[in-house]
Amino acid sequence: MLRGEKVLLRPVKREDLQRQWVFNNDIEFELLGGGDPPEPQALERLEAEFDENVRKGGRDGTNFAIEADGKYIGGCGLFHFDEIAHTCEMGIGIGDRAYWGHGYGRDAVRVLLDYAFCQRNLHKVWLRVNGDNERAIRSYRACGFVEEGRLRQHVWSNGKYVDFVYMGVVRDEWAAAQTS
Ligand SMILES: CC(C)(COP(=O)(O)OP(=O)(O)OC[C@H]1O[C@@H](n2cnc3c(N)ncnc32)[C@H](O)[C@@H]1OP(=O)(O)O)[C@@H](O)C(=O)NCCC(=O)NCCS
Image (tube, rainbow, N blue to C red; front, side):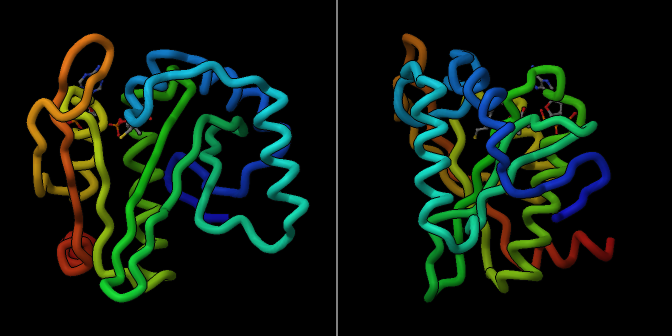
């Protein structure tokens, strides 16, 4: 549906769930993703949730599967829309480790930002990331995100406290980078 240089952002298919289930039970991937402490997840729960969403009908909202080389490698999306301020949060997780650190993340984020600003008419996209996730922070910086705030020692992750970093990119900055 949305094409980058390396990735395709498309709807999640039921056949993606097997790989998504493997990713969701990879403790390193779960820790990098932040949020609640990792918990196991049964494939049947993922399938039931998917089927329930399909049963409701409508569209898939702003959640995308990330596909590269014909494979499902992870997901990304926009959420927490503020209809007044025209802002939203962005999230991404590439679960296939073979695709870490090779520019697939920044390609997906660039496509998502293009969608956010051009199709959804947003003013700003922001995100949250654990301060020790250097790879993610560098990837986000390459897409124009800047650090906007840092809650020190705010997250308990894997036996230690880490900072919680807020990053954002506003439309004007993004637009200027498109022409430079
Ligand atoms: C975060 C994520 C989307 C980034 O995508 P990616 O394709 O791996 O990253 P990119 O290739 O675009 O950029 C990686 C950057 O980190 C650097 N990097 C690569 N491996 C690294 C490592 N192990 N430690 C620190 N930096 C690393 C690269 O050199 C590059 O920085 P540079 O452009 O300044 O040289 C992806 O790694 C991912 O989903 N990881 C697992 C889950 C996760 O962290 N989710 C984010 C939650 S906020």
